[in-house]
Image 1: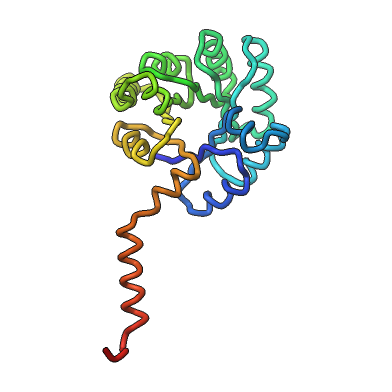
Image 2: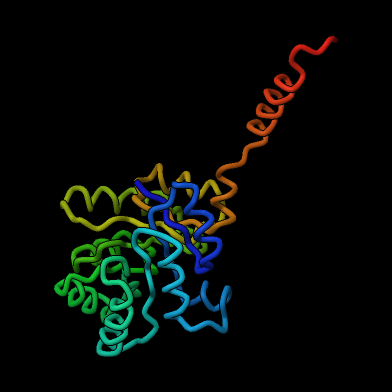
Length: 219
């Protein structure tokens, strides 16, 4: 099991990696366009690499097979050991994943909404298959069986792909993904911070600290 952070903010990524609980980073064009709209992609990704450890997913934005392969080569060159090419699910995408896998390039097939898509991506050689929890719910479906059935089929077939679950909107989405068998929930910083906090924990810590501070005092 692992937790990835879904962010492109190097400062926040560095701070959160200091907790010692994270194993990688996922980015996407939407995140980067919101967080750093004027930055160059290579500069952003290199800062993210410097602020973290583990795999860093960078998403392709071109659409033809030839363009995607060329774009992937550029991203891969930034850090061949850690860059994971995020490939959107499609017929072109599967061909790209197959070619990149043959070259030893890590891939993350993204925008998956169903087990059959994840299975195809794993067969093509994907390192990771990314199921979008919140967007599955938007379609009116329960995401738990999607994650669970994907994990079962990957384990049964001995496929090496790891399940990333993203598009998390609530802390309970993380719990559900883990319980269903996800290998790597990828979580935004606000949700990760919520996982630390519990009102009963704060109350208990304050009670202990107050008792210690008042030790020996006359009542």
